[in-house]
Image (cartoon, rainbow, N blue to C red; front, top):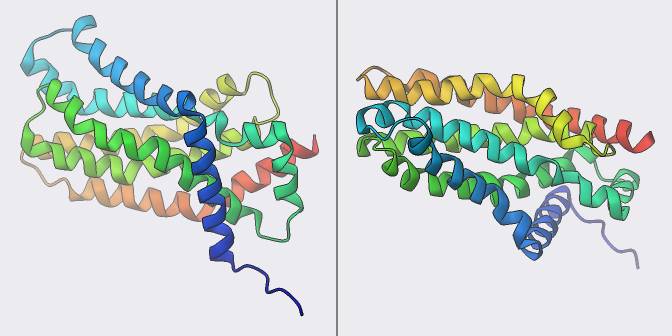
Amino acid sequence: MSVASPSLWQVFFAVVKRDLLLAFRRRQDLANPLIFFVIVISLFPLGVSPESSFLATAAAGVVWVAALLATLLSLDGMFRADYEDGALEQMLLTPQPLFLLVLGKVLAHWLVTGLPLILLSPILAIMLHLDESLLTILALTLLVGTPVLSLVGAIGAALTVGLRVGGVLISLLILPLYIPVLIFGTGAVQAAAAGSEYTGFLAIQGAILMLALALAPFAAAAGLKISVSN
C-alpha cells in the first residue's frame, strides 16, 4: 500500500514549525536582534537630544532604522545553520519546490524577528514621545514593511550562506533595496502627524510587499543553488 505524499501546504508548515522549534532552542540568537533594537532606541535620546519635541519628530525614523538594522543582524543565520549541518543540501535534493521551502523559512524568520519588533515598537515609540494617535500607524507600517525586510534579506542570506564574512556582504547587498521600504514607512507616520493623507504610503508599501512575495522566494532559491554548488 503506497503512502500518500504530503501536500505543499503540509511541507510549507512543516518547514515553518521546524525553524520555529530550532529558533526557540537557540534563545540567545533569538534575543540578540530584540536587545539590539531596544538598545539603539534607548541610546538615541542620550546621544542626540532628550528634547521631547525633537524626539517626537524623529521617533518614526529612529524606530524604523533600528528595526531595519535588527533585521539585518539576524539575516545571516537564516540558512547558515542548515548549510553547516547539511540540511540545506537535503532541501535541494527533495522533490518539493525549493521556493516553497524558502518561503517557509522566511515566514519563520519574520515570526521570531519581525513580529516581536512590531510588538515592542509602540512601547519604545512612547519613550520617544511619539503621539499616541500615531502608534497604530507606526505599527501598521512595520506590519507591512518588516515582511519585506525578511523576504529581500533572504536573497542576500542565500547568496552569502557559504561565505565566512557573509554578514558584511549581506549589508552591502541588501541595504540599498531596503531604502524604499524605510522611506515609505516613515513617510506614512510623518504624513499622519502633519494631518495629511497617509494611505498612499501604505498602499505603496503593500505593493512592494506583493512584489517581494512574488519574486524574492524564487531569487533566494536560485541563490541557494549557486551557493551550495560552489
